[in-house]
Image 1: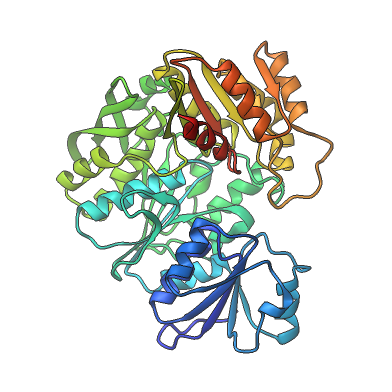
Image 2 (image 1 turned 45 degrees about the vertical axis):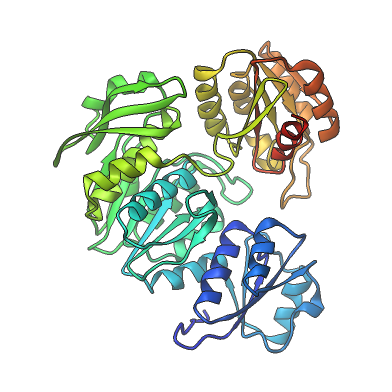
Length: 471
């Protein structure tokens, strides 16, 4: 594998530079003196930001973009061997690294690399830890999987002490990392276009945990089924916390045996929780959040545990959790139209959808509408009935076409297949083949005091943004 000498910057080309993680890495390396360029399919806000920094971005991935003066290429997981730029890199013998391999090498430059993993909640928990470190004036370097309002970016270039980043399991990319503190929020079936089954995914997370050195630390959600399988033969200490998914779970918290657990949980009219964090080694502490939902109590406990292990004071933790208002596309209030409140959320897995709609039901006034854009055929097919059950938590569901992302085979399914499953549960569900038709339907049917959530990992957010502009 090509090893980067960070003391001697070279020319690096990013294939897929507009991705959230890739754009952040490009920015970090450009700041370190590397000559950075790259390509993406189409312009985006992240690409335009890179161009403002002086980074050349090519639109359309073409063979001629690969020139002889490129020393190294970095590829996203979506790039296949038949990609024209991949072919040109092979022909020219230019070394290539995956995004995960680059992240791993970069982590070695920091005293305390913090990697946040899990099927859900990575962006929120990474941002909470980031907020705590910023509040403590710890000057962290950050790589977040969403736009974090406090820094108005997904990336922050800080000092060499802390590097906080998301650790994604897809294609086992996080197995190239070198963390000192890792968080595992949850382990569920997902990315089944790559993993064989849940057992394969659990093994991947176990291997991720084993990357920690003896002087490192693992923070683990104790409610993960058979979580001891993930911690066997680890060299480092393990700290557990109680990850809440429902109010019913809270009754189990004190007796569950986790190192951190919540009690005395209450919610305000916005769905923001206040809770007491109990820990074996510290006095009880009271915290108030500014993001909604019981699931965020669990995310906050993981962030509190991380802060304690990093030696951050209680005052900074308390201020940070109170001030943290979420990241873009995580229960983000977009505005309103005709008295209808519009929220956007990135949820694209049944568990995430359930958490988001449960939160929305707790604070809604009128009818709760959910406009859902399924993400990838493989995920939609694998969780068809689970999607239907989770979406049925909304009063009325509207489906857009499946966002194919990297996939070309529709596996014989469509959004209309999901529509049938939702209707079997007795829930009103509509399907429209275009965003324009969805917007027209919503304008004609949503009424004052309703809540509308656009949901999915694709471009469904555009529907809400278009409706809000009408106001």
